[in-house]
Length: 235
Image 1 (tube, rainbow, N blue to C red):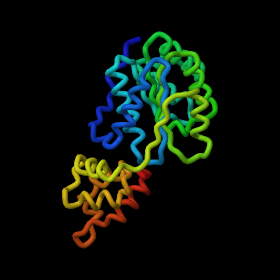
Image 2: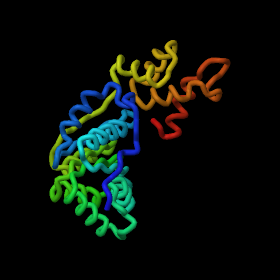
Image 3: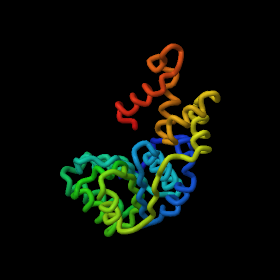
């Protein structure tokens, strides 16, 4: 087996504007056996913060793996193993994949990053708990708040650790992100107001405000743009 390559997700620092303190807390949890839970509504930048923490772990000498949790445990495990640098194609079946993950984490200094963990079923939560109990892997999990018991189930699986909750950006951080994302100076305040400080809304509005489909009579139809983002499941 070969060591995992550098994380492919090379986001810019703009992705964590206004989250520097939260990233510092996550960085402090990147130790053998450390764990952290990132919670927040959709669009608050949980995935970007998780990826930023992964880069910190890689820079600290950890073998890192990132995967989005699905309701199919075998799919999640394959993606996680391949991200860690383990040839998952050599394994078949959930139990075999779990053993491969535990062997890898038992013989390497690993940091595991799991997105969309609120989608995890009971079997996956059991695997996550065993990973925390039986290996020294550092485990970082991002989950959307919504289902009432999702955070509590994840807390029990992780045993203990750092908890970071994300809400809207401060006004100054939202303005900085808008400018960094390419919003023209004359539109920054409008974008910040209409985004309500939600990072994904700011970035997507920066990408789309020039599209002719969002212009009516020469003016930007902000309500149409935001409605489209919701329909496309971005918000």
